[in-house]
Image (cartoon, rainbow, N blue to C red; front, side, top):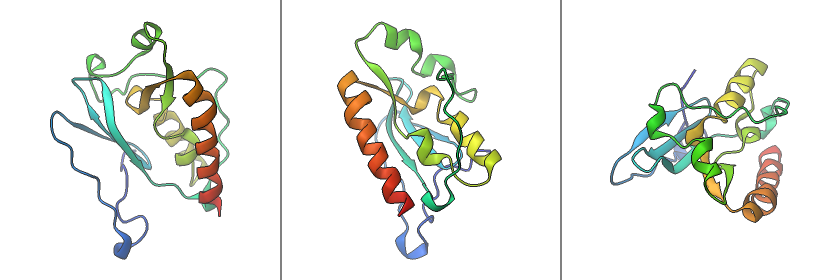
Length: 146
């Protein structure tokens, strides 16, 4: 299931389209989100997602992050653990799995799995990823619930 980001999620009067990008691009649609990436650089230009805090589902975080390649994109065009191991960076999710885990339990589970595909990762400094970004994600979750 890969409908991707819905620009009409907030209604027809509040349509939010995906921004354009120049240069190489791969548009990868997932459940509740879309990653627009530069496959030549193996990194996303951006991610756009829909989050419904009122319908958030409880999907347990896996003990070990199940990162894997998106099967619809050649692995040679995606980030991977080997690239990150050779750098001082953490792997940071562009969209938090919790932001897209909403709806029926099966749908939330699918979105959770897709949030761990390599195109949804960006190298982040450890301090940013593990402290600052986590606070932003928690604030965002609170806003979505309200």
